[in-house]
Length: 328
Image: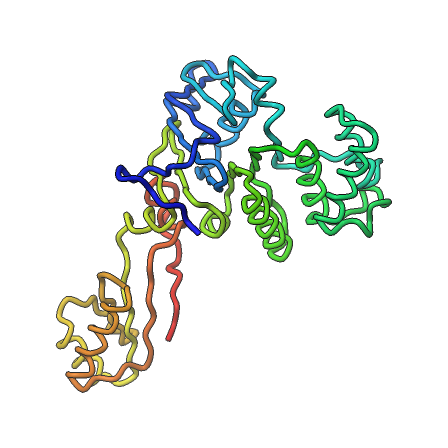
């Protein structure tokens, strides 16, 4: 259930991740040009952007892998530059490619991570068994990671991230290369993590993934955040909602065009495109107008902007996608 917002509209939960004027350049190429973020604890935040936009650089700075050139950042209450050890103790990072030792079994990979985190022998074994069961890989615990499918490798990789019981997890394109079933399994895992109080910082190329998982979404382009909000808030910023009416009878088509004079005609397809709010009330009003004019459609479809439309409109990357429609 969404948390209430205060009078100014801000989420009242304390931030798990925050940045102010974060900057990074490589030579004369500016990668991050003043990034401001505030990510409440116990939420999923998705950072979207075209290739080279700076998503991975942002994750690398926040996880202390590289340093920023300017600005400030805090993760789990620790200053990234001033207390990197505190940040590292509070986070987990899952990169674009599974960081597994293929010669080790699933259980051995987890025990290796427990050793690297200086967990005691008993605690490490207990944690490994817990995670093997949690990620449904206990039955293959003795198999080498090299034999795992892509989905199983990603689950084991995420399990290794959780050995240290992190408060904040950075998932950098975690479902790249997974089939739809494995991707949805990973989504369910992310939801369960957030339900337990973990904060997830997600970068992804799959816009449906952000739509499904994220409490808030930011679009990064040219080193700057060009938009931020809930998925629905971002979609509402993009024009393009419309209803498409199709006819098989030319006479019915002409009568409908007369009843809806602002519609865009497609005489070849005997179809009308009616722009505007595609909500239920607007749709009911349109159908009532057609009914009053004695017009019956062969079928109709409703189009509303999705995150693909938002991405393309805000980043200016590519041409408009094929409309996603719900037919009736």
